[in-house]
Length: 106
Image 1 (cartoon, helix red, strand yellow):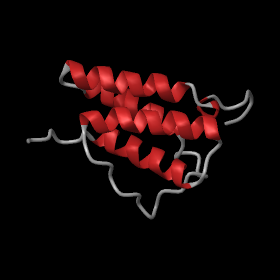
Image 2: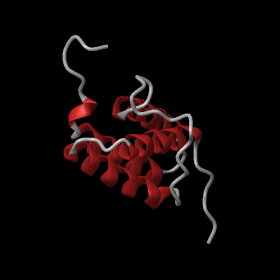
Image 3: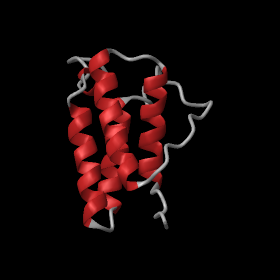
């Protein structure tokens, strides 16, 4: 079985989401993240390892950052199945409470 190369935005999104899971997020976030990772692994197996530099408390690591990376993956998608899976992962992640920071938060 041949696998396609994993685009950099997808790698980044998976690493971010894995880091957030490792930080024990609220249940709703964890469910959305797990579902999104399952969708992404259907396109590009397996999960990448968690990097030591990933810290889910940093502003550039979290569900909003993963959503941004998946948006870039959609822009670069070269086939319909990948495009659909990235879009599905975005929809799943948007259900998570932390995907929507409170008003006034930066």
